[in-house]
Length: 71
Image 1 (cartoon, one colour):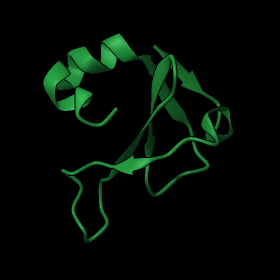
Image 2 (cartoon, helix red, strand yellow):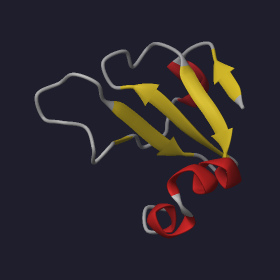
Image 3 (cartoon, helix red, strand yellow):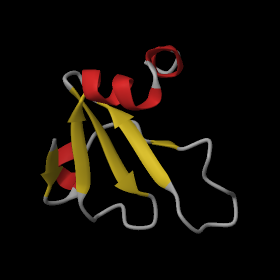
Image 4 (tube, one colour):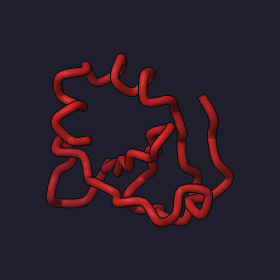
């Protein structure tokens, strides 16, 4: 696992807001799939830190069936 210093390390990616995030703001995360890694950030702090994990680690976290539909 790696934490990037800012979202510029993961710029140019298509970010998706979590389906579990509410519409009223609050605690929301966004996810972007890169060719070798998956990036996660706080939707309220898009210029803030980005958590980067391997695609395999992400699939293990969310379950392969749900992730394969998005990629």
